[in-house]
Image 1 (spheres, rainbow, N blue to C red):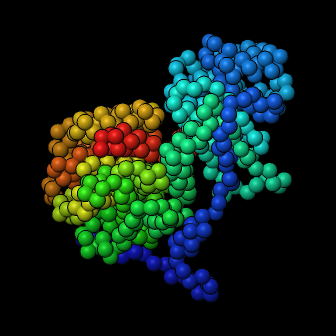
Image 2 (image 1 turned 135 degrees about the vertical axis):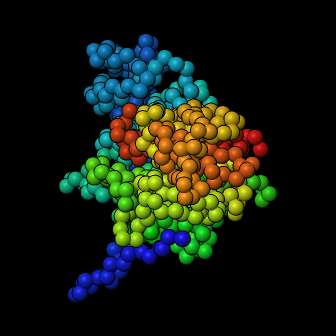
Image 3 (image 1 turned 120 degrees about the horizontal axis):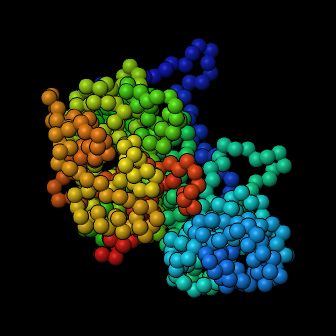
Length: 533
């Protein structure tokens, strides 16, 4: 087993601080400086407001949508003239901001395209309204949707608004005048407000809150979120949530369990690793759980195989998988899903130091299987295999899905439109692909070719942990799959291409941390687990 000796920096003389800096960071993280409040979401019966700030949709090629036409009449035709003057066509995902239209201080026109209404369309519409509201100083914004279809449409508008309005302002001071945009109320004027409110509160608000929790975790800098503070934030998030049990495996316990692979990644950092396990029991005691395992590298310098300095700041997002699986179970528990579900977050900071692991080291994992380290920058698979073995031996899951920002090569293959899906189980693949389409977090299935085993042959251990062909994402997935026990349905999601957005081109994913896979996994549980049971 690699020597695990955390580096400790003694305080200099005449220095009053006695705690290591990372413990002070833990105290600061536990305070969780509150971000600015965002808009409350409210529901009201459909009616045309007399004035104020209004958001309305426009169908592509047919500007006389019911709400648009009514608003146009109230402005003496000014709305239609303004849209025509701006050559606004109503294409899906486009917006037109108009000021001083008739009695209205501001009108936001949202293009809905030419397709039939669907939950995803309404979520995009809500997200565009929420995004506009995040930068608006208006105290009240009213979004008009008079149509009865689709069922539960008002709740999907609210869900989209909550996703689209997300901003991380924790470390930004308010302007001198104390003015903070993005606060106040978003009123959804819909055909069935009571039903929409009930569906939002019961089914979608818990998921929206879990997405926000994950986005906050990923966006926080690595001096604030690291293994111990990730655990502390999780305990706070689950406080008072029913039917939840949290287990934390520390370094001595990992040593006793033989979790040398997870230890090897964290041994170069002064911040010790943790294995966080959240168990939610929403179904019968005898029902095998669904397990979600997430890569939780709270900062990835590359270790001894150090990364280039350019854009290394992004590597705080390398714990996106751990944040996503933890938040997924948070959402399931809050909406009281009828499922037994487990989140396992394999948490470590990958740093170079005198105690760090090296390329060429041989690691004996918790399972007893050995591998040869080829690059300390391929650390995600190292923490995952011990975490996956732990949950399989302890909890006997029927389905095991790991989520990781594993490889850059998946972005080369898929761009920023899809995450990579790897599995040998066709039924599981079909269910996850369908969940991706329904949720708007789409996957593309990639191969697990038998030739990848040849690429991982080692002369001194049972296998190498990287190398060989140019199929980096597939080789990484194949390595992880070596720790899947017989009879367990397993899928690997490589979300490296989707976890961080450089722009706001996807309405429900503002620039920054996307919290990708929470909506996908929640939809998978709804459609493939809860309904099936």
